[in-house]
Structure formats: C-alpha cells, structure tokens
Image 1 (tube, rainbow, N blue to C red):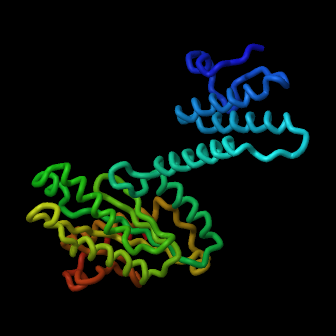
Image 2: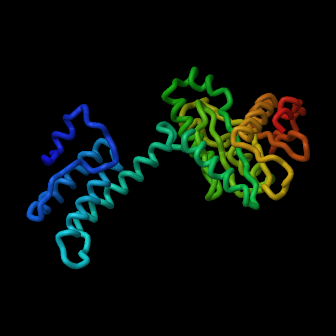
Image 3: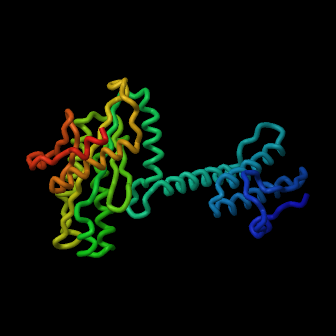
Length: 291
C-alpha cells in the first residue's frame, strides 16, 4: 500500500469521504514522520471543516507516539495544543451554526433543538414553560422611511433589549424577519408575563433618536404559558408547535388591540399586560381555537 499524501487526497475527486483516517504505511523507523503526516492531514481536513476526520488523524498520530514508547508516555505538548485547538474551533463553528448571522441571536435550528429537549425533560419537571412571540410594530415603515441598513441596526438593537435581564436559562431566537421568540423555562405564569412586559417596555423607552432623528420603535408580544406537567396530569402533552401557535394567536390579539402591547391568557380570558390593560377589550375567539 502506498502512503497517501495530503496533496493526493485533496486532488482525488472520486475519493469518498468517511470518518476513517487516510491510509498510510508505517514501519517502526518511519513513525516520527507519520506523526507529522497525520498532523498535516488533520490540519488540511480542519481547514475544510471536516472535523471528525481531522480528529481521527490526530488520534492516529497520538497512537503512533504511544506505540514507540515502552512505558506510559505523556502526550507531547505540541500535539496536545493541536487537539485542544481543533476542539475549540469545532465548538466555535458549531456555536456559529446555531446563531442568526445578522442579530447574533439564536436561529430557528437552535430553537427547534432546545424546545424539543425542554419539552422532553418536562415529563418529570415541576416547572412551567412560557414561550413569547415578539414582533416589531410597523417595521416595514422603518425600512421604507430610513432604509434597510438602518432597519438592520434596529433589529440588532431590539435583540439586545429583548435579551437584557432574561433569566439564566432563558434565550432569544430569531423566528423569521422581524419576529423573535423568547423561551422562558422554569417560570410561573405571572413571572413570564412580567418578564415579557419588561422587555416590551425596554424597547419602547429606548432612545431611538440616537440612531436616527424621528425614529420610534415598539414591539408587540403574545405569551403562551404551559403549566408544570404534574399540575394537569390528565391533560395531553403540548407540542412546541402548539405552544408557538398559541403565542402567535395572542400576538395577533396584541396587534389588534393597538400594538405596543403584550397579550396573555389568565383564568380562561385573554388580557393585556401593563399600561395596555386599560384598552378596549378585543375578542379572543381566534385564540380559543388553540386551547
């Protein structure tokens, strides 16, 4: 078998990718050179984002070092640093794949993964779960009046304001366009409404004129709360999609009430939080279909 050099591996279009290290020949006297070869191939694969294969080559290099020593060896410092660097780069790349490129909030992929994990854990949880769907009011007017570049800055600032003062296990994710989701595990219904109303108020009170004279930005939200699993043992489990639909319908109610408001459900009725509570009541017939 002929040793497969890195440049050969790179230029062969017919070679199938798998998780095994590239084939190399070895004799005891060649082991030092093979360690360097494995490291070189690992660097090449890492530059392409082929993290698993790169890690396999670093493991092969480490095995060769062990094989050449009679007693339990220490890992060479250079190889240790290389492994640590590769692991760090892999973790950073994975984190970036779960972030929205514009706002740096989490994206839909992360939202779906986390909600699935949270709802799976809730079978034995004694805590409730709140999901709030937030939407910028009249955002098209912002883009039409001030331009899309400034609109992007507004989205970035809104995310900063929504995320401020969230509980440690809560997070914000971009749902699409100018819509964002706040996920609040381990909270009560009252606390969840207070957290979302505080976020709405932060956006309203922000000094938007510092970005552009005459700019005003507000958000509306709908808070769907699911009580602890053991609170309603006879009730079927609620999926993430169902809870997002509830939040969406409550957001619709907040919009119809005049915007810049947070809608939620309490004791069978849909209500508005904060200063909006005194507004004219809005029919909640659309919301009832999701409960």
